[in-house]
Image: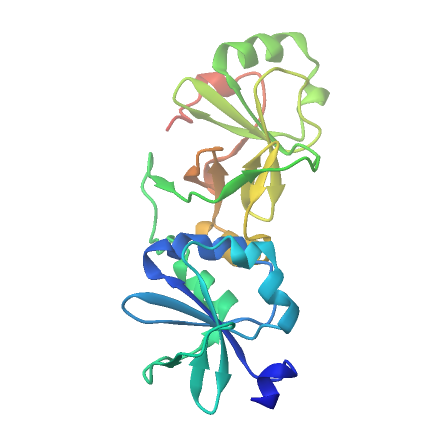
Amino acid sequence: MDGIAAGLAPIYLKFPAKHRERLYQLASCKGLQLALDAEWIWLKGFAMDDMNNPDFNSLPHRTWYQEYQGKLLEPGKRLYETLPLNLVFGPLENVLELELPIQIHEPSQHDFRVINHLVPTETIQPSSALLLDKKQLEKALREFTEIRFSKLTGIQINNQFLLVGQPLLPLPGKSYWQYHDLLIPAGYTFRWTFLMDKLSKKCSLNGKNLALFEPSGNWIAIPKSDLKPLHRGIMCMELKW
């Protein structure tokens, strides 16, 4: 068992498949391989020091193993287990991408979907969109000079109005920062930031829509063609969802 003592033996970790949502806490871990069977999630590609990593050790009911002569030995124990023969390992990031619940087609209006992986962040991003009360905007359009909102576009959503562009008007409302075609609430970001490019392509149908998110993970697809230049007569136009 010299390989195990020297830390050269491959290291595996398993935890129950019913907790697969916890995979997202490992999204920033590079080089891990993942496989699934009916009851367990298996991971490999660890360094010896990873066995003391709190991110891994916080996984529920996890078990560490080192491989020795084709069998698995749990550290500190003398009983071996057999690695299931039907496991097919693949990169963790590929599995997480497939887990994204956004297999979507052409959206209909009022089509809400949910992705439950927005998390708070202290990083401050410049605002690119503002969702505000329709009456507030009507009042502002009468008071501001047109040059103040000449670069903005917008659309009415129920009794609110979404402004998109920069610089935004200094009005109260819900602010959003923009990553490609994702409009993300100020103070939030996605847990799996390395998948945001692919998320944007899927949510926007390759650039046709903006995806407007709420902190809860609810989001709607807004066709870019429905966004109209902001002007004083825009409230008289049929731009409603």
